Length: 266
Image (cartoon, rainbow, N blue to C red):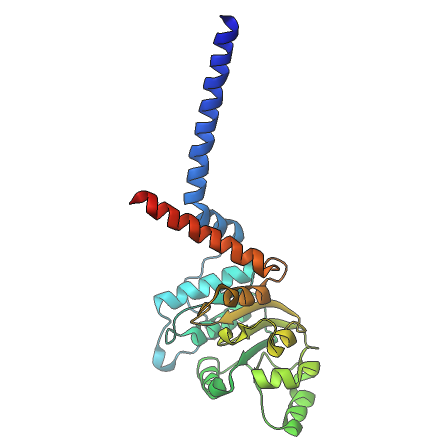
């Protein structure tokens, strides 16, 4: 009888322990995203006002969601993280980047050099926005013919007397040997969905560049297939997202679990 009683007590104890573990696991699963964010963004910093160096036209101010974006990018910087700013087209990703550059200058004593890579079609817009919003920031617009680019590199880039260099995908590939020698503080890539082919020449050329941080701008980080998102994440964090198949399998299993959960609910 004593043995039966002891066995029953052990079984009851094990049941209570398993129930508690199950409860904790469920709570952990529900709160996984919050816990991950808190872990990744462990260094917190309040960002309540827009940078002084940012000069909006006609006294305008950043919108509330743009301030949220700025705070998020500052958190990425503080926690040594790279990221994707994936606001939809027309919500001012360009302006948020300029706010980040101004904030780094004012609060982090980080004056660059920063590299901004953009499609040829929008470099005129970037130049106009930079001149308007960051008039005190020294920018080099690295475009033009071979001789003009060589002159700009010799006179402006090599001397490191600038804060931001803006160029296009085309010139990054053409002048990779020169530009990859610079120790960039930030590399910012506009319309980064163009890098969805990880084996493309552009993506491979960018692997040669050294930078403290990387930031991708795209309104469509995922267009057709998961491998497109993996390509962007691999470019940002190659030591974490190093296996495309494992990444795809992981997402597939999550989707299957969610689908199974929906069936059970019905």
